[in-house]
Image 1 (cartoon, one colour):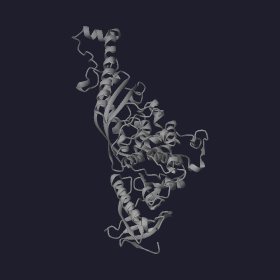
Image 2 (cartoon, rainbow, N blue to C red; image 1 turned 90 degrees about the horizontal axis):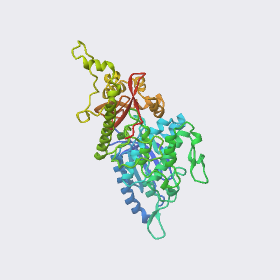
Image 3 (cartoon, one colour; image 1 turned 90 degrees about the vertical axis):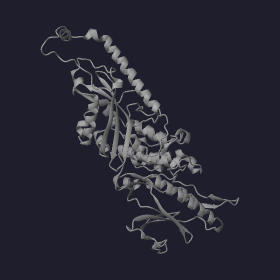
Image 4 (cartoon, one colour; image 1 turned 120 degrees about the horizontal axis):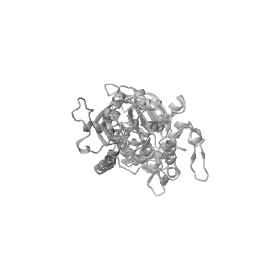
Length: 497
């Protein structure tokens, strides 16, 4: 930088962070702020010095800077833009300094990442891309180098958008108009349509999918073979322990033709999150800082989304009412069936009680668990099931989340059915995720239907995350099964409305 130590009479250069074909990046201090906060100054160099298009570049630079400002202000996982200026025919951006390490650095220092860590990164970044795309912007340069894990909380931050680079690559074409002379993106991480200069929204999902594969395999795209018949990337042999559900999602994300990929970040997120089961998985609002546009759940996911999942949500009041009606019908049929069969299973003791009203200590009649007025009469709990009358499914749910708040993970893990545990992953994964939640707040708990062996409960949950986010999960439907051995309810995942 020709020994310049102060830029714009304000930003003191501390050291160089990196350099490339478009310019250099420096760690700097803002001398006009009381804290002298640290920031990143990017010096951007146009590929041409043609004075005829300098004004055009200047105008485009201002426009792209305004977009970067809006993105940074609209999402905490994009660095904020503090300033931009032009000085001595050079263009500068001043952005928030993210202290941390890139995903490339993480893999180089610690090796392959676990599936649960990669899944969390994807679930955290997809809403960021959804927000970016809602602004009609394609990032165009998603790769491990452009995703940083913030040191303070470990949250992934998306950096280095390609739009400004395209502006710096502006030249004069044969017709006398300004046009970009370069293709934005990184070889290996960008799909064919982007390499041809026609990126689409799913181009970013392609790049994100290959980034996830790098984290799981420690293999760069150039190190992976291509199926010459289909054009698809061959990578699964380098991650033999990955779950089929995640592998299927990544395969779809990196399909060679854009029509075969996910069409939006929300669609990819919905394909990932059905594996997040009730009481275990990631709450949907964590992955929804921006408005959600519901899409049908992809049918290729191994664990099909059900009404018991806290992740697949509907913002429609009509859907909620339909679920309530379905639950009511199920409960009514169960109740009628048991009522019809009741005379055949009556015991001698119950007949004797009816015939001897004057005995001193008659056995009290069994009653079903407390139920909201709108649902009274819909439960079917046989009188002979003493354990069920002692444990209210609603109270079981409250106790479960109370134990989670107290970090009693062995206790809560034991309250998951074997079927649930098989799909939920390992106990270590379970603990790792819940450790990211500072507090679970339980709101309204409502019984939907109950039989001797199964119960369906709706619960409103609020998650206070370690990073300070408060996440609402208003439609969490949980299916419970009764375990005779433990004499308790267990979380299950097989309820389908």
